[in-house]
Image (cartoon, rainbow, N blue to C red):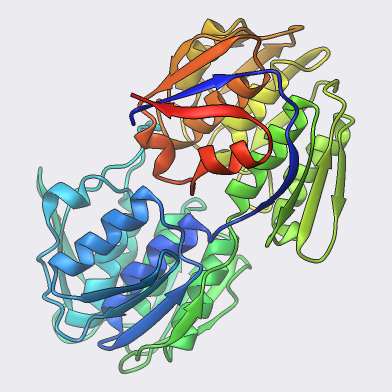
Length: 420
């Protein structure tokens, strides 16, 4: 089924359970490369990116056993360095984590160039600078990135030129078995960085300070397997929060960590939408009428760039004029033209970094495209609120990061289905 059809106008009501965080699961799965043993990972989201990652590990010689859709056992005892299939690696941005993981275990790495969503320039210069600071030599070609160290990586001080989740995670992986202590300054604070640190520590690593701007990694000789549970997905949570708000519904989200969504909750409340929190639940209640807002997508704990498209879809129906600025990814606004097809009033500045959204009374159904994962989620949100029928193509982009999004929305009363 390669399209999603939505007949909009139905308020979402009910309860939905949130799955594991994709952005945590990717580096954690690649971190199993370092362990030389058996890891059992629970609360794993059964989405496209995770399936590709498991296929990469299996192709490299790992024994991958599914105990359930959300529980997997991975034995990397006989994993072969440098054998990740290029065709699979190109499907994922997160395949870059293989470089740090292979360096940590084998002292050398060879990984094809990564792919993933087209969000504009996403260089890995910070990754390469970090590996070099740890003592590795790095070479890249049109097809591969290779890294090698004579002897062992050496702990050092790494100062990130700018905050990067991917580079922070890769340095944590590589430094986990380095000689001495590595200090990562200007590190990313995201919950998935904390999740990765907890996983590494469960495997015998010594990572301190995750969740702050300074992370210290005291290298150990080797890592062992462990049993670990992935954190709930904050972006899936935020997506359903916005879906409830735009449809004028009331939805309770279970298995969540409310503090991870503080920036999103604050903006919804600012717009006049009710957000109630408990220890592991969030309830969003909306009348379908809400005010405008100014959004600035920045690294955590600020408003997450991965929630920017969904929030923009909500703001198309707000009373007044809103602005949305994203300096993290310079091509993240490509989806705006799709919202315009549905009647949204949006303009983009010359730098492609700020959108001005003039709220309209209603959107109308249209044929649109899921240009990337989060843009696809924005199309779903817009379709839920629109009058008439919306058909979304390229929905594999949505499946990459959302577990059974159609089934979950159906359970909340949405008129939505997959179609050929």
